[in-house]
Length: 108
Image 1 (cartoon, rainbow, N blue to C red):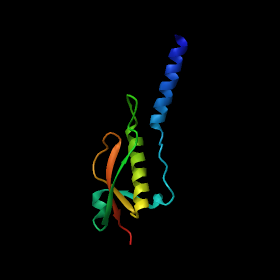
Image 2: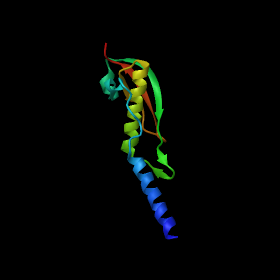
Image 3: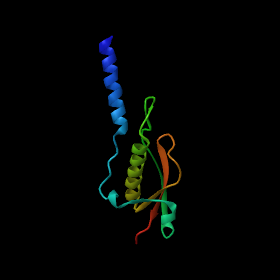
Image 4: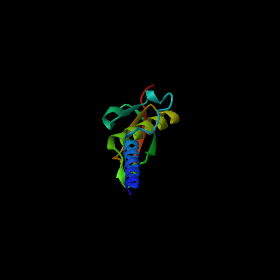
């Protein structure tokens, strides 16, 4: 029984560590995309919309909120760059590991 308990603790620790790690990589070129608020895009042209999502939970355990938000921002940057935009603005809160963004073209 002691061995099973130790294995369970190791698995739990691995799950918790995985919940803290950023799992999404920024694609080449996407580093030039800005994540702004709506106040910063008044002179920009709306280019499109995108919904991005990541794993918000590992089993019954919620992942770190900041890690989830960072990964969503990274995915939004990747998507904005792939579609020709240079700026992304979140249009609402994170819900179940997903978030909507508007994509803008701000630079000429």
